[in-house]
Image (cartoon, one colour):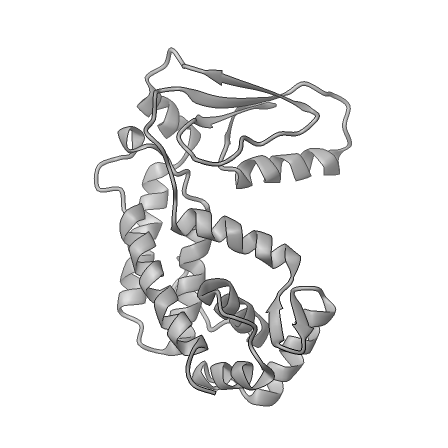
Length: 238
């Protein structure tokens, strides 16, 4: 993580609060109170909320502000990272192979991003895989053919070749240290946002394939504790 981590913008502060806290709709007064906690003036919060509504990141109703559909989907992806639900692993791997050629570059880029978001890694061009240990629907697309397979290669070596596990673990340790040593609310929120982004890159490997002292559980527990802080903030009396 960069040492020059700075407080989030007013808009990112609002959205990070709502993504992390899972609050009921927040009124303008709720948002203003939360903004002041993070050192943001009420007028700045109002402008940021209006722009977020205009862009579809927030929806406003009589009850207050809630997340827009795109961010609801992002929240579900974050929750998967924070509250991973895996199952006993039988040694099999998911495979998704691109079988349609000649697609435009933007379409290929969208598919790559979707496969990465589904926590698959590219073994070679057009061939994506991961251990079949997650309790969620397999990724499907008309241009893909899906398989379940058992590799001949040692699965630990295969996982290490697909993901930079050492780099991920070092960054997780830095984030844990940063949050523990940061008392300022705005910088704590910025660090927590970096944590959830990092958790979104966790390959969610089965325990058999994780390196020793894998810090993902500590990072999840730390972020879950911070979520409770956010929830308490969002639930303060109005």
